[in-house]
Image (cartoon, rainbow, N blue to C red; front, side, top):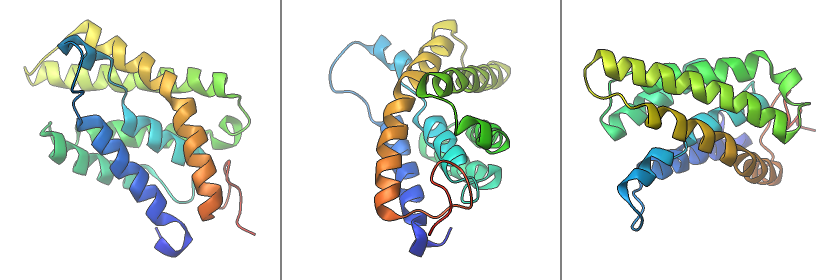
Length: 173
């Protein structure tokens, strides 16, 4: 990522996603944490569709490693999940960039479902935790917040002129 062409925005959005993932709400019951969206998946999916030449599965895996260190989870688990989300976004970016927000939400819902099943299965194998409600909550809330993430990052990326060879942001002029 060349910081001269908006690479810093991609890094800043990932840092914001990580902060949102670990921040605890000062109010509300404890079960509300089960509805916490997977911000990192939404952000990496967006950048995979919007600027696929700038974000790939390897950079997503490295970001996931930092995320695992931040939250104290099994090292590499979030990296694999983010790499999967980014791979799907890059693989189908031409098609996904033409989808409406509702259709993109459906794709994000499917990716978030796979990510949650992979995470919860790995945690179950490691004998850490398993909860069916914890699988469904983040899946739906990630799909619901994705349009907000996409609108916000698209507007900021166009102002900053994040360069990409293809995707929603298109080639730089």
